[in-house]
View 1 (tube, rainbow, N blue to C red):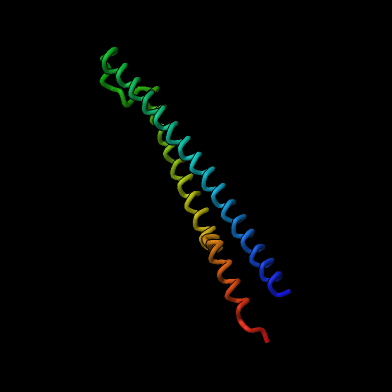
View 2: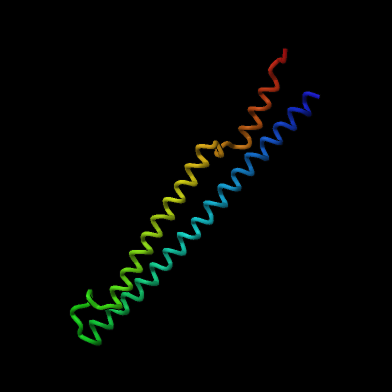
Length: 124
């Protein structure tokens, strides 16, 4: 009966490690997708800004670009998006730290090896 108990214990612990890793990777993946989305939004705003600045300089001979309302609005959006990007990066780091502290980095093979060596010890 000892073998089946050991096997059951190794299997349960292995499933637990796999579940934790899956949860960790799911959270990290979602945050990374959010980061990509924010970066894409920043790129769009820079494209708008470049187009607006070009229009103001080339077509309207406007030398007071920084005070133009459309330019200010785009710059404010870029600042906001950069703030969102920083928050997402912090969130990603917190998730990585959370799972690092919980021991989710355990490899399932390490768990199995640990359990097998424990079961090899004489019980008395």
